[in-house]
Amino acid sequence: MAPPVHIGPARANAHAAAGRGFSLLELIVVLALLGIMTAAVVPIYAGSLEFVRSDHAVREIIALIRYAQERAIIDVAEYRLYIQPREGAYWLAREQYDADRRRLFAELDETVGRAVHLAPKVAFLEPNARTDIEFRTPTYCVAFYPNASSDFAVITLLRDDGRTFEIAVGGALGRIEVSEQ
Picture 1 (cartoon, rainbow, N blue to C red):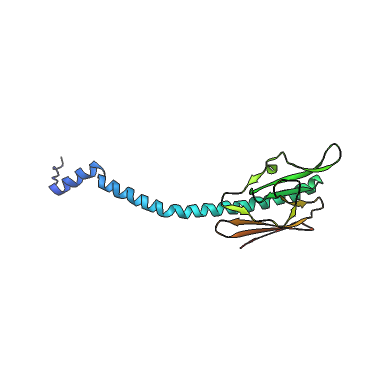
Picture 2: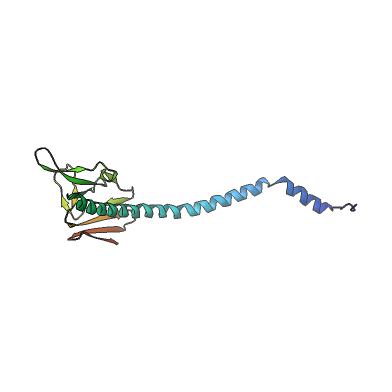
């Protein structure tokens, strides 16, 4: 049989403290440190999120332009990207003819045909594109034709920090160029 182990008073208090857990003061200090670290990190992520949203808006418009170019060729019909800068809205429409053979442009039934609004901290500047007078509010459009060409247009997005993104479209092959300023 092993001899009994005697623990001195200092070691006995250490074992007893280890079994009790954390003191209230230790918990308050840890929570205060977590609060300070969170307060320091949140603004960094919030700024990143706004950049992602504005970048997403640019990418979404480019994707819609490419979609319109492809569909115009496949469907042998003119497609138009409509932009209402004051409302921050844009949508895609397709050339159709009514019963009297009048040409009109109707929103698509698909998701890409519904009006989309820009993120809150992103706005359109007045586009360099043709104006469509059929709407009550100023509306601009960029046409995409079945022969793979498109109107010349410049669509400018403004972020609240003053940076702009320009999407230039046009030419015989409907070239798209994006620049950030």
